[in-house]
Length: 237
Image 1 (cartoon, rainbow, N blue to C red):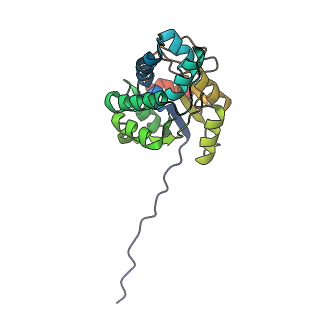
Image 2 (tube, helix red, strand yellow):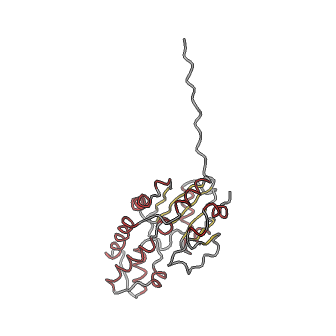
Image 3 (cartoon, rainbow, N blue to C red):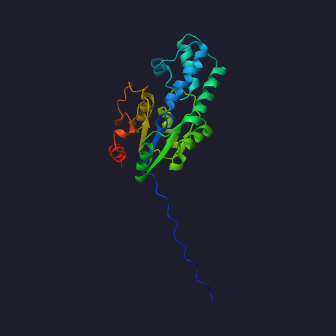
């Protein structure tokens, strides 16, 4: 007697994300800007350069400390070679700060949960090498929240620019999906807007003076607005 074939349930396709939420890993999810300031203040002492808050806001708002070291040196009328040990020292010190002090910004887990409840894919964007960014994700608990990572290992003075956003979306096959970006600086906001994103600006103490014209929402802190209301404002679907 032939056995009836076993009944198999059809595989359910995973729902395609209706929108994508990107955020700056180091400067939105954790307080990396303050860590950067502390590191630059420390390493530039050897060059007799006092890094004040004003000086940092003008020359230090770069994705990686090596770029800021060059800018600070040039501003003081001195040159610095790409292989200068001061650059490596600054990068290593900031990686150490990430490993020891990174904590998820209050309220950010709620942002992730609210986005995911709307089938919005949440992605961290980093200018650091993948291993550094992954370690930071783990330290902050973002990996456990189901957040994806795009690490670009970029030494560009401005990151992310519009071409960075567009390249990422193309590589992920998400050019036609609405993008929401949480950014901390005017440069990142401008790049995201140029790429067609809806922006949530979350400036810190060093970028709060900047002009975020074009951003849909500007928050002093995440608790300014409930996450559900925030996505009601910025979601396009």
